[in-house]
Length: 169
Image (cartoon, rainbow, N blue to C red; front, side):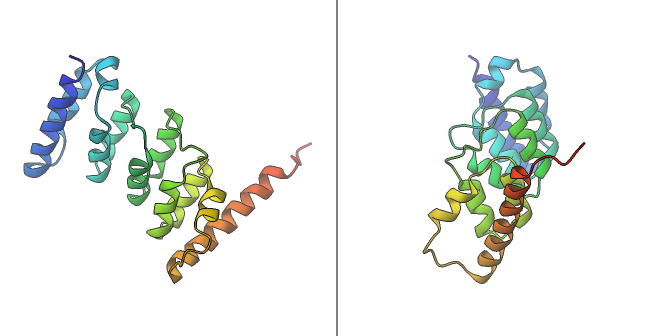
C-alpha cells in the first residue's frame, strides 16, 4: 500500500511534535519512500511541516514531490506567514499552480498585513486584479488599506516593467 509510509509519517509527526519537535522519524521515512509512495502522501503532512516552521523538512517534501492537494492556498499562505519566500518560489518551480483564478493566499497576506509575502505571490502569478475586484466595497482596516496600496503600487510597477520594451542594445 503506497499510502502506508504517509500514514506512519503523519502519526510520527504528531508524536514527535508533541514530545520532541524535529521530524526525525518522518525525515527517515521520507528518505526510504519512492516516488509513488510520496505521491500518495497526504498534503496534511506538508501543511503540518509548514505550520510547525520546519523549513528543512518542508523543503525535502517539496523536493520529493509531495502533493499540495486541490487547494494549495493554505500551504502557500503558511509559507508566506512564516516569511519562507524561498519555499514559495520552490513550490512554484515544483509545479504548484498559484492559479490565475485563485487569490486565496494573496488575500490572506493582505488580511495579515504580509506585504512582502504578497509581493512574492504576485511575482509567482497570483491574481492581484481578481483579489482587488473581489474586495471592492469591502471595508478594510487601515493596515489592510496600507498593505493593499503597497501591493497595488508593486503590481502596477511590475505591469509597467513587463510592458516596457527592452532597452538593451
